[in-house]
Image (cartoon, rainbow, N blue to C red; front, side, top):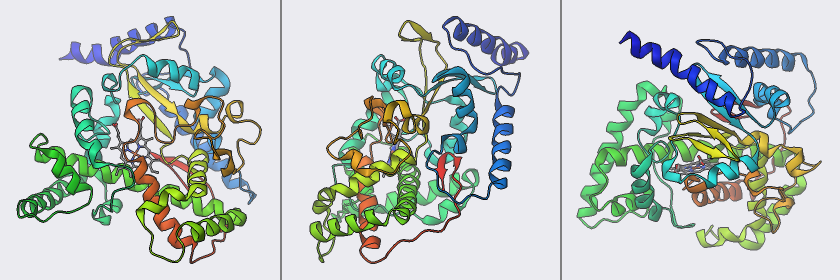
Length: 403
Ligand code: HEM
């Protein structure tokens, strides 16, 4: 037992560090057993103090050094790819789309892991749903769930909002049993021929006996936690940005009038709201709801002759890439939705430099639904209200980037 613990906590990390160094991956000095935790904490506290001393009300979209001061500092010192440690776990930090592109080509989506060290915290929210599942199970889940997400053909999914305000751990069992009762009720009504055209209905029809009840529970939790906060945040940042840019409010109001008119919003018409899509993309560029993507190597991975050892975690800093002047040019921190006119990547010099929905085969399965959930409330609000600005703003990072 003691030997096992010694190997896990001391020998394996030392071996990992040696291998990473031999392959040219270096980074800030680390200490046992916290790794770089205390540096991260200190840098964040220093930043909060500095922000408090400032009295400026000027809005600055250059948020990387504000939301993630430790990464901004380490990037200056070690470049766009380096190693840092969370406790005894090594993380290769990546903010270089070229490196990411080569790394991603060399590994199948099902062969990536998700960092073991983060799994315990995420268990109550995602269970073993699509966000966390790995290997052949991921292929099976993704394959079965994909038909439930046809482009722009989904109606809302109903889950209780009270979840948001509760602590994840104490909620786990409560959510599971609530969902199980909803699922059983739905299964009964499906047998009686009562068809529901929503996400759960599609999932149950796709089931064909291959998903267990607990797998469906986990997928429902996953859709809720992966889909609600991300879209809600995109809308929140949008309202802030449009308050600063009333000319875009006018542009979008005109577009809504032309595409939707005075009638009720039809799903089919949403694709016609093109300028609204540019705005959503630009909002997700400046304030990505998912500020990072994570992977864990399940075997040695070679990238341009350097080996990322099996077991290494990989932390892709999306905020950094979306604010990189070398990728976007001098106007990188300006709100310019027109950069997406006719260009899905907004003119970014490297396609992997714009990734609000992740990358590779594990890219967000709900992105079309996200666009729909964004466009409907946005159109309703904008066609009825003018949005104006409250000048108190200080973005912070806590799993997502919050206003
Ligand atoms: C603005 C809205 C959204 C944003 C910005 C967003 C972003 C993301 C990102 C960054 C990932 C990780 C991809 C990766 O690791 O490469 C992801 C995965 C995922 N998202 Fe979304 N998402 C949004 C909406 C939704 C919605 C509406 C749903 C479902 C109802 C959803 C369900 C999922 C699922 C299930 C995964 C895991 C996919 C897999 O690993 O195979 N997302 N999303």
